[in-house]
Length: 174
Image (cartoon, rainbow, N blue to C red; front, top):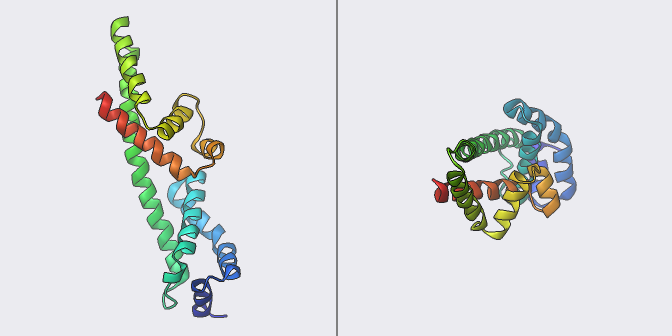
């Protein structure tokens, strides 16, 4: 079967063609994503997301374009998006840590108590699910993967909820 026929089968929703695509490219894409990110978990998430997007948008695939090139390009684009998202999350996290450092080094107990109350009130004001995820991560020390398994949600949801929590806390605290 040639590549055009293969893409046509994917486009038609042929599950066997999709399985064949995953089996054929998952290891190669993982190695590529790992070489870009240097992070096993991130590479795994990126490849999973690429195949999910292929499945979701299979009806829009163009048989005239290289499926292999499309997969590698999608992997690269998702890496770039993830990198920028994580970079901004790290910046917000650093500001939060800096604020917590102020609490630790406050001159007197009155200042510490005031800062702790502000942080606790800000956390209490978070949306219910956002607060739950944030506390599991920051108070209880669970990884994003563990939180996603505990709550039966995707890792992407965990990451976005933590990002939302940090942004809201930053607005209220700073």
